[in-house]
Structure formats: C-alpha cells, structure tokens
Amino acid sequence: MTEIQNEKILILNFGGQYDQLIARRVRECGVYCEVHPYTMSADEIRVFAPIGIIFTGGPDSVYAEGSCHPDTTLFTLGIPVLGICYGCQLLAHHLGGLVTAGGLVTAGGLTTAGDETEDGVSSRESYSREPYSREYGKTLTYFDTENPLFAGLPGQSVTWMSHGDFMARIPDGFVRCATSDHCPNVAISDEKHGFYGVQFHPEVSHTEYGQQILRNFLFRICGAHGTWTMQGYREHAIAELKEKIGGEKVLLALSGGVDSSVCAALLAEAVGEQLTCVFVDHGLMRKNEGDEVEEVFSHRCKNFIRVNAGAHFLAKLAGVEDPETKRKIIGEEFIRVFEAEAKKIGHVAYLAQGTIYPDVIESGKDKAATIKSHHNVGGLPSVVDFREIIEPLRLLFKDEVRGLGRELGLPEALVMRQPFPGPGLAIRIIGEVTEEKLSVLREADAIMREEIASAGLAHTMNQYFAVLTNLRSVGVMGDGRTYDRAIALRSVTTDDFMTAEWTRIPYEVLDRISTRIVNEVPHVNRVLYDITSKPPATVEFE
Figure 1 (cartoon, rainbow, N blue to C red):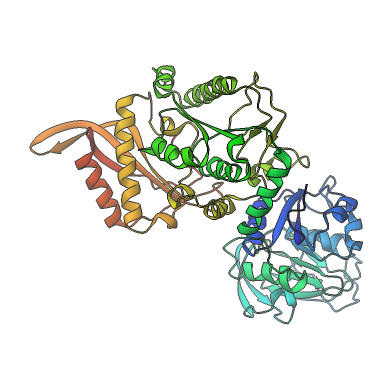
Figure 2 (figure 1 turned 90 degrees about the horizontal axis):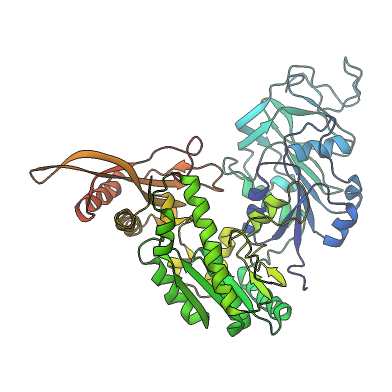
C-alpha cells in the first residue's frame, strides 16, 4: 500500500465532541490529517510520522482517577503539539503545571513567580487566590500577537469557551499568551519545544479567528505546505485500486447517493469493465432520480444493472405505519434484492462500499482502527462469497467526497445531491406508504427544490425537503370547500448534522413554493414550514 500523504497531522481524540470538526478544519487548510484514539503509543506515532499533533478536548478532568491520558513519551519526540481545552490541560498537567477545578481560582490578585500561596503551592506568575469563574460560551479574549500561534490576529476577539477546570500554574518554560477577564491562562506556549495550548475551541465557528489560529499552528509552527488536494487523492486512489484489485471483479451496491456515486465513478475509472454496479430502485426515490442515476452510470459503468423493485417494496410496506418498522422492512428487502442479483453474477472477489471518514472516526472512539459495523449495503449478503471489502472513500469527509466527484467529472446535480435517507420517501410520508402518496410527495418536493435552486439558495442550506403529513384540513379552492392533505417543508443548516438550525428561507421564496404546490399538486390544500431546530427535533420526521 502506498503512502497517501507525506505531510500529516495526527489528531489524538480524548472523547471530545468536536474531533471530526477539528479534522475537517485541518483538511480545509489543505493539510492531511487523521483522528486516532488517545491510546496510540509513542512507537505507533513514530511510525505514523506526523509533522504535528493536536490533542482534542474531552469530558474528563486531568487530575481525576480514570481520566484519559496520552503516552507521555510523545513529548520527547520533537513533534509540535497543540492542546485544545482538555488537551491544553493535559500539557500543563504532564509538563509540570497545576490544573485544578473551576470555582477555586479566577483572574486578578496574581502572585509573582516563586511566591508560595496559602495552600503551600509554589507558583508562577499565573496563580490566583480569588474564586475562579468557569467559562462557557462566547468570551472576549486578549492575545499576545507576537506569539506565532496568534500572529496576524487582532489583539482581542471572541472565542468559544467550554471549560470548568483551570491551569492554576503553568509549567516551567511556558509563557502565558492569551487571557480573558475571568481566566489569566487562556493560552500557553513553549516555543522552544513547540508546545501550545488553548482553553477555547478554535475549530468552532463561534471563535472569530479560529481557522487562522489553526493555520498558524499548521504552517508557521509545523511547517506544513498545504499539499492535500482531491486531484492528488484521485491519482493516488486510482493507482492503489489498480494495484490492489488486479484482474479481479468488483461489485458495488449503487444507491444514487453522493458517496456510492463517487465510489462508483472512482472504481469505473480505475478498473473499468471489472466493476459491476447494481442499482436497486426501490421506488421510493425523488422525482426522476432513478432515471438520472441510470443516465449517468449506464455510460460510466459498463456492467450497470438497474433493478426496478418498486412494486415489490410497496407490497411489503402495505398497511405499515410505524416508522421503525418501515425502515427495517426496506433495509431487509434491499439486502434480499441485492443478494439475488449478486448470485446471478457469480464469483466476485471484492465488494465495494462508500464508507466515508466520519464512519471510521466514530467506530474508533473506543478501539483503534475498527470499521463501523453498518455500511451502505445495510448488511452483507450472507450467500455471496467476497474475498474482501474495499472502501475507497474511507479517508474522506463529505465535502471532500463532493470535491472528488467534481474531479471525476460527475454532474453538479449529483455531486451536490441533498442527503437522502436509505428508506427514501417512505420516511417522509407519515403513516402508510402508497403509490398515490408517493406521487403527491414527489411533485411537492420537486417544486420546493426547483424554487430553492431558482432563488440561488441551494448552497446556503444543508438539507431541504418536503414531507407528506397525515393531516387533512379544510380549505377553499375556487368557490368550493376542500378537505385535503397538508405538506410540510423542512430545511436545516448545520456543520455536522449532530445539531441543526432551521433555515430562515426568505418569505417570498416560501410564498412561491406554497403557491405552486397548492396550485400544481392534486390533493394538497395547505403548506406548513417546520421551524424546529435539532434538538429537540430530528432532521427527518420519521
């Protein structure tokens, strides 16, 4: 296996909620990185050979029994380290400082270096006797802009804090390089050894110059050059796939989603006719999507099989209203249909999947290098004998997958396809799924997508769609009374889909969508807009 990138950043995860976000921010700077559990040994780190290491945040207190700690030998490897929040406190704790619980100390009343405090602790300049107030949320922070970590920043700006513990004493050799009104030690650094720590989260958008701080660490401190591109990844991945697969056959379950589509395009370019794409059309896709998938991939994939199984899936869903039951039925039947097609093909050495990096990161929180047990197929066909599963996208985030799709020449409509659940429109229809309901929802959803695109808003929101509710209401159309269905519209903006804000779509756009749906879609007389964020709601209705 060839080395994917010589210039690498290692992110050690201590259980922080922003591990993926840190990695995405580093990748956005054009620098390759990987997230690994904090249990990675110093020997393993040497083999990985990063140009820099980032410690994530975490829920622990460094002084508590059972808390997460790295192999401290890594501090002797000569590799720059940036500690974020809990990661910053780890630096202080292991290199000779003192971390204590919030509520014990605060800014003000600083002693001088070498003073002995009332509790007998010999302290540096950064120790305080006054009660310290914990910091959460947006905080005005003051920076030493002579420090390489904060070069080019204004002297003060807003950062996002989330810490209850406090560095009461910083280690010898470190200096304080950022403060706030309630915390004398917001950031510390030891430039000689390349150790830097910040109590705030530079990776979140609430920190005004967070990306610049990360860039400073990557380029000024670690000496990165920013060579990570999707053009380079495409060339590397194609060469590696050719070498690995040789003359064997590959089977891919093609859903039409971004991940499986880019995976198919990459494999088709790498191994050509050795690839067979099986597209199971369960009849639950949006308007014209099945035909669009076939149009794109029947040319790219010489062995393209479309299985039109809509009637089969509808029969299985007849009378079913519970959303979880619908999901299970669709997942099980998808596997069975795919399995039947795979048996017709005969022996295939490799099964390809569109697994992407967030799945790999999530799977590795408790154990390194574990691959997530669920995947795009939903479960391996037990009667098909595959030598190995290959996952060409397993090191890429969603935005990188889209970028790779563009490099491979996929149409923009497919590359920017909205996230779409495996069960399709079945979980955007509340209650039983019927052909009539599918027809109504397809038309309403298509109108919404058309108007969002026409208004130039498609790239300002992360997911938007229509839902057919099980609500009927009284209306007036023409001079007559109606008693018909209600469509709900849903749109969210989010970084990671773990939380999401409802999108403030302009009223005039909502008005056009509503007017068109009521006028053009039979059996709909009311349009609603969901203004609930996640949490407490989920993105999907079911």
